[in-house]
Image (cartoon, rainbow, N blue to C red; front, side):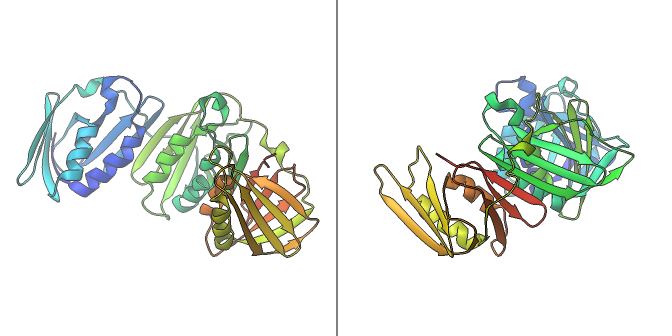
Length: 367
């Protein structure tokens, strides 16, 4: 293949696709990209066999169609350091060559036929949602997913889609995030009766791929896998094995105390109080009472902190301890100029944060 490439466009595509390359010791060829130049465009592919992406590269003039294997790490390093806005790329099974005004790089090639094939999005049954809403739902849930492989059923987000409603749920057993949205159904696509869990890595890759909040995202679940199609890419992922826990049972039936908190001021106060919390046991005590919230932390060696803020509060006084990181994680994904509602039962029951009508966040208290 031969092409004239736009450096910024190719670098952008490589950086997105590189998220699908495994850091583990896998097949050597999977440390590379596969480039396919045909029909006047170039598609870059990457996979770790669990996650894969096909992404179209903008700004390329195809002079000669073909396929090639490009070393991912070296290619990204070259593109970062080059100063040419455009350069020539020539590649085949033997080698790939990049030529700029004052630089030239040559890298060994491999047979493109040895690279695993990645599926295309040809499904006629799918749901469709705007990228802006999809990004919002991903960012408001994926941070709450478990990271330990021992909790393998929760190392991702549960997807619930029925007709025009969509819900994402993520939990690590200590906090739970639940985001709702509207999705358009095409061809009768349904996952009713299923509990598909999409890995966090796949959802983060999907988020990184968006270029415009108004673009549409197509979603199609198949047995044991899911496909996403955006304006410039198709992302494939295997689903997390196992069954997601029944998350609905942990929601408190009724909060006895309620308050509304300004996001920016509350976030600042939480960060201030957390300064003196121990690194090993992150703990801040939140004391809710009429018209006032007091946050206190006591470090074994560092000292103590006390932060107060005026609030509007209804219900009995409640002293409850949280990991301040879990509270801050919530506030980071909400607009600074907004307010979040909080419902409390007592010091031993989960606290429920609610934002608008489509987002809920549950935190388990510390003892």
